[in-house]
Image 1 (spheres, rainbow, N blue to C red):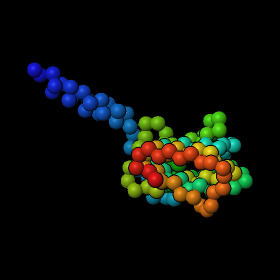
Image 2 (image 1 turned 60 degrees about the horizontal axis):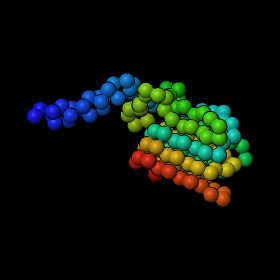
Image 3 (image 1 turned 60 degrees about the vertical axis):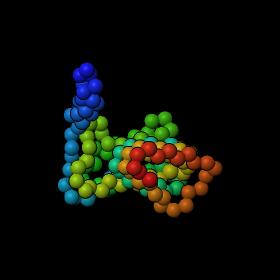
Image 4 (image 1 turned 135 degrees about the vertical axis):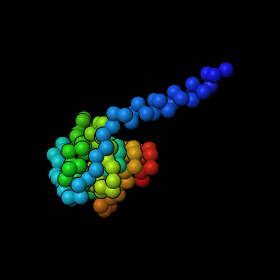
Length: 139
């Protein structure tokens, strides 16, 4: 009965295929701050190793702080009423580069964190209700 050994190799093979297409990028150590355009949103989905700092304010805004060569790999876009913050598909960040995304919004109804990113608030946040979902090691 040799089948059990083959079944154990299948997950290992599948995992290696998943990571084979990834490109690892290291920061260059040169700090960079970049303001990004953001439309109106009431939901945020954070996916990846970025830390998120939330501030309640009148005009929506997004600022990304990381090494200058990593700016191009941090994607921020609004789809419907959701701000998506994530790494570009197919890339991972190596080394000790800090990646912080500062978000200002008048109101927030939902926050979803997937990955190792942490979320903090730059002050008190007022609102009726906020649904928070955290999947991964983020907090």
